[in-house]
Amino acid sequence: MAKFLSDEWLDAVRANAGGRAGDLSVRLHVAVGDAQFHAVVVDGALVTLASGPLSDAEVSLTMPLDDAMAAVRGERDPSVLFMQGRMKTAGDPGKLLELLSWTARPGYATMRDAIADATEF
Image 1 (spheres, rainbow, N blue to C red):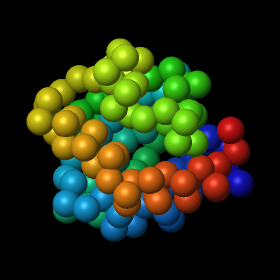
Image 2 (cartoon, one colour):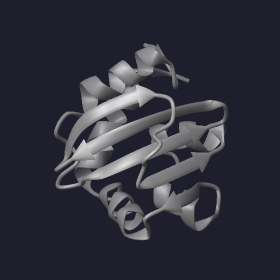
Image 3 (cartoon, helix red, strand yellow):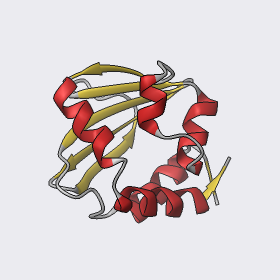
Image 4 (tube, rainbow, N blue to C red):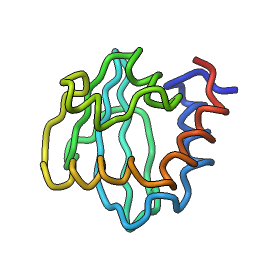
């Protein structure tokens, strides 16, 4: 099991995320507590996932650690975190809505559950 947000966890995400994002394309920056990582998804395929910021991100998400852990465990929906103001966002609103709508699709839940099973919280 990989500790949440560690480099090993990013490896686990890569191993479980391949080709599961439908037609989503986004350049994403995520900040959780003190941790930062970024992802580039093109036509549903995860092209890049790495620690650190992404200077040309289309969407940036910032959330507290407990909410991020709950989202990965499937206990909190990302759209609800956004609507409650617990997940702060910046960037392209159209890309954000595309990303949030993808999290409501069955493929997302399958991927999220596989990642949660490989995660030590």
